[in-house]
Image (cartoon, rainbow, N blue to C red; front, top):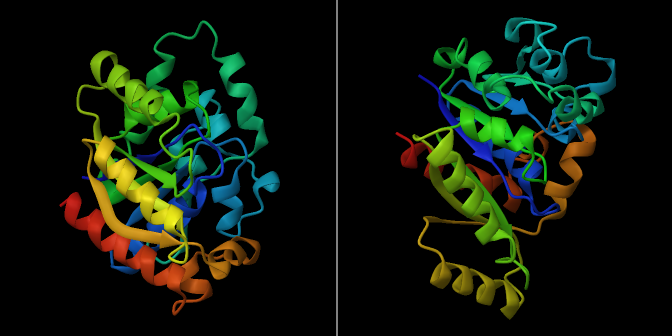
Length: 254
């Protein structure tokens, strides 16, 4: 049965999509079957896997509106062991179209229930907001992994996110847990990065992953080639760190 992890943070630019693409690819490289769900209207995870997002007939938008089945949407084996439920800008309209729909917080969960047993891991890339789409991801997920950028305002907004996770747990998904925090854009040359890590560790009761994701030019380049980092440059610091994170996530969820 698939372990479902939502990758969420309402702040933009913290490495959510980078983590969704590369963590899922590195888990797949370790022989696990992975489904990646892109529930962000920007569709960057979809295009980061080399998919032409604006030419797709069926995406998560059509799925949420009930215009197609999850079978019709999943792009199977885009890379070895990786299937993708894609997204594009059409998804931005979903929130308005779902006004008045009953149990709209469970639409994604009800669809994913049909296929989750086929995968070892399901990774959901959430939009940078605490919207209905993010709530759908959290009602579907077993746990939430939170990427945090190593910068001065790292803790800002984190309490709001944890409050949302707790609300979803209380009212919609009693099985939801905090998977942990992963630090992104870590710069070993600055004191600030080390201070942020210490500060967050001191303030958080949640698990903090020991793998630190560095600032890495190859990580930034990989999406433009439509490849995850382990296929774009397996020897880069970015690839090695996501491989290490994949080991931790697999151990944490086994």
